[in-house]
Structures are given as structure tokens and as C-alpha cells.
View 1 (tube, rainbow, N blue to C red):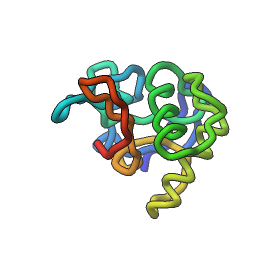
View 2: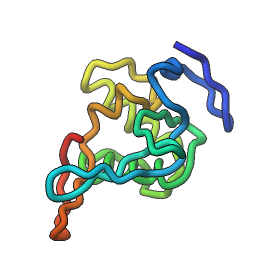
View 3: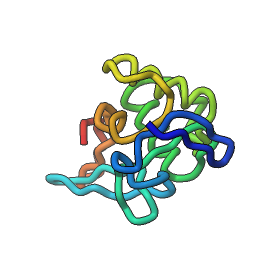
View 4: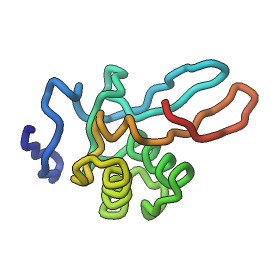
Length: 128
């Protein structure tokens, strides 16, 4: 584990080999007849990390998944990774047996139900 300090975030984060950087944007991941929109690095990798102090479209997409697919309280979908978003991520981590550190990373991503946007306009929740 590596200790990370950026934008006021201090905590335990995946090693550099496990994550490709900070989630700063979103990317469309196409599958079957639709797509997932997931947090990504500026280069498009979905193997990224976020934590308290992160903000932007990547955080908003995570919040959308936590609220709409997991029925967790993030304090709204405002694109700010605050205390409630951190608590929601801890809840997911605890449910699946991960260390509940509240930091979103590659291991947590694998256990999040994401909104799946069908080409016909429907939206459902599914694993990536």
C-alpha cells in the first residue's frame, strides 16, 4: 500500500501497479447494446482512484451508481467526494469483504453496480 496526499486527501491507496492514477473524467465502456459510464483517468483507464477531496464528473458518475443502483446516501449527485460519498463507498467495501477505507479504487470498482445505458434509452444497473 502507498500513502497518498493530494487535494487534502490523506489515506491508503492502491499501489501504482494496481491503479493508473486519479479518476479525473469519465469514459464510456461499450458492451452489448449499450454502455456504462465509469470514472476514468485523463487517458481513459477505469483503473483509477478517488477519495475525499476528489471532484468532477468521475465522482458524479460514482455517486449516481451508489444512489441509483445501491440505494446509498451520498448527499446527492454533486460531483464532490465528501463524507457521505466516503461512507457509501465504505458500505460497499464492507459488504464484499474489502478493507473499508472509503477510497474508491480498482478493487472497489469490481463490486459496484453501474448504470447501464441501453441504446433504446432505458437505464438499468449491472456489473461492468
